Length: 354
Image (cartoon, rainbow, N blue to C red):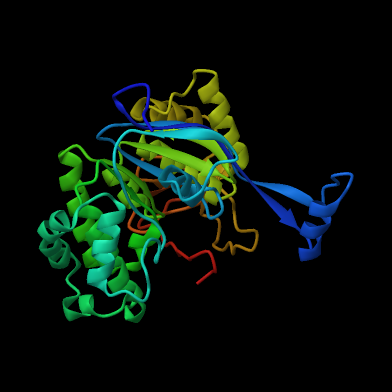
């Protein structure tokens, strides 16, 4: 496939993927044999009219909650699935690392799988001979490479799969959540290698729940939710939208998207964040938070917390903090009496209350 613009590595055109869901297995047979073509199924939209472009040399992230359609769109791009409607145009050779086990024969050894996958990607035996040592060095699984992959741990498996995907000089690299299986040292090694090939012009499309990696490595980010396209833009801004979805702050999300449609917010970064902060300054910070109804309030009222807010590292009021993210606590306190040495304490709990 080719795309209209030589600058485009990928073009996703109004892609929809519909699955037929049946309440009982027999309903499938009833529908197939119905003389009146009666439907016994309901349509489930895994993807609903998704469109976006990826420029050559860009690193683009796709984020969303579980079931939002991230892996489905990657499988359609790589040709594993066929869209119900719409199409994907690809300009370049794709190397993909999807879920664990995709493209590997469990009964073959690691070496045999390397050559088999190389053949499927169009490389000759001689070309794979030249790449083999780099693949083995990167995977670093020792003599296990001569054992059937069905004997591998998940960590060893992802090491070999990523080493293969990254060392075949792909024009487009597609990485799904498989990297989350590896240890933190191997993940860091993978991201360093991804940065190297990106500088050499490789286009990277990645799906991950690691928002730190999304902000650090991506040029653009696409947000999906329940099969629908939500927004596309600068990583920090898109992560903020994603956090609203996670925190079920859908009203705030819809207001922000409406503002974007009206030209009040173009998701372009600092200017939009500053406008939002100025707008929030006139109201109460706590009104934008979900407050624990079972909280304990105590004290003698010599000082009273009038307002408070939890802000992420981009200055947005949020209920949700991501692992490793810096945050700020802001409070407005009214002192009813003179207090020489006020003490402030905070208790931070996870979503289970621990």
